[in-house]
Length: 296
Image 1 (cartoon, rainbow, N blue to C red):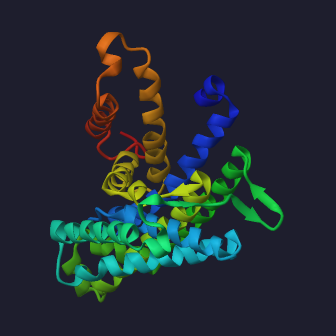
Image 2: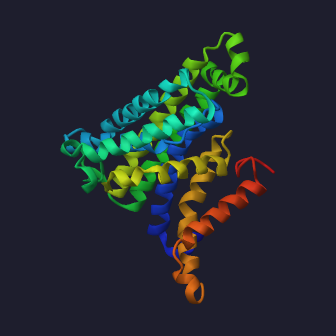
């Protein structure tokens, strides 16, 4: 509401579109980290796979709406591949393997120039459905909101199912879950498939909203942003994805505005946004360790 009143409707709708897109990607992190209890440090790779799959399919003539499920499927495949070391590794060691997977994906996108155009990046046309194009902030926000509602509905249904209860059992005590007849490896695989598909869907939408994608957009900083998103909002709650996305998207904009009001050399100090952003994140973690989605 503040952005709407202060900076205008188009800017506010554009930010709302990004919040909704980050929310979908954040749901993928919450499924893997908050529900299944696994450490993932390379979630940005799943978003990148979905974004490039969407771009390539649209360039090949596939309608954008039909390409979105395929982009989600590519993200799910990436999640399945990233989960393979979970059979032999656990904890931080497995988290490092997901980081290695993200580095491999980023390097592959850079090197495979014949397909991805490498570091030069790819232009992505506006989201289109028949003769209608989502080329206005209002249309993009509407499509993103619809996608968020569908994603929330599917995730809520999963968490109420046997699959969701299996994730929670593995998260709390893997040995006890195995003793109760739950296959931990299969539960982890399903979590990564679902988390990867959500991130792939977010990547497909993100490609249309930004209009241009390149490998460096989905680097390690982006993966860490998604991880921070989950912990700021609350990794155990689906609503935490929305709260975390709101902070991650809005905070850099607020810091940029604040920077213009600072006197003297403070306004020109290098890295000021990162310092202030880090301070805000630390404050949120200290004051609301369970995340913004939970009552203190």
